[in-house]
Image (cartoon, rainbow, N blue to C red; front, top):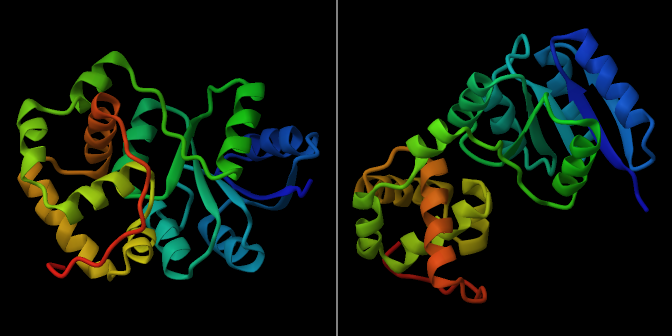
Length: 226
């Protein structure tokens, strides 16, 4: 079985040491670089193209959205995992990184962390468990639920792909349309549903799927209204 290559980056040396020991003791993972600042992290991502990058929040010299932009614009296959220390960190990451990331709390037990990383390596996307207060704040509104009926077929396609964790670039490739067109569609979707971010959109898509059941995926057909 092939080892999963990993870059780790955090401003705190003790976090880097802990991750190095934990991952180094497991034969499923191979740490190719350990970084304490943004410049070395970006260099390692470009040089090694790791399967996974485990990143602390607020790494000196680079923002979460900048790293995500580099991954997408340079077509790197690396899956980003933001390693967060608090609810505030989770909110920061989910606001700054629009798509294509996973979030794991630093409070996660070692066994659960390793299992979560294995899931990320297989293509799954992980988001943090929210507190009851956060869950209520993110609950889809009745207005948004009712407005789902106003979405076009293409907008529904995009909403479903967003819920699967795909980035704009990945959605564009799947539907054979440009990144700019995706952004226009998302703007229209947000306006119709009276929401402001992809996280709420994904929650709406998932809640709708839970109620109605999701049909098998069919190959995307060209839609002239794009």
